[in-house]
Length: 223
Image (spheres, rainbow, N blue to C red):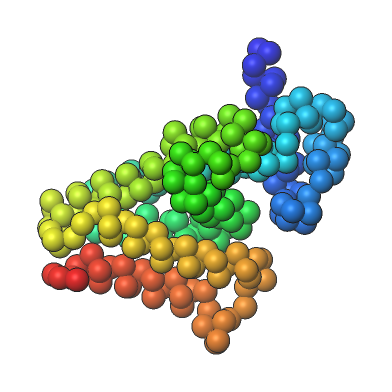
């Protein structure tokens, strides 16, 4: 019962943090504002989250959990279709997830940038003490490769059923798809909720092109 109450309080704090981060951004957010939004004192907030950085990692962990759930749900809905349709649906779902969750997409990009810059977390000299002390950083490390593994699995399924060309390297192709989505996320993150056409190109146009290019890549006989 005590653990359940603790988890509920942590969830309430994370939700409050999301609101503040969305309103003013991570750099401008203040712990006292998050505490006020959560209806608790600043002292109580620090008993749950010892730093703003740790709290942002908690938001990032929640984002990754939700993204992975989206992947599993997409895979389940497309289990009776071929591997190509499933991986295209995953790519589409990933972009939609980012469209609907600007904060989550930014948090995930920043986390993966940190992972790359620290050699997958092994170069601790580049990590802040707040990150190294965060249990959410440990949790993120335990599961951050799962979205890639799930995508690779669907590409391999497509290769087996003949819907995806057999010469493609599943992980290389997954990373190529990831880079396309990252570019898309950068555009929508900059636009926020007030997305307007960029050079007379709408986000829907850009998204449709990415999906068409991805489909073409999966069916190309050589690269």
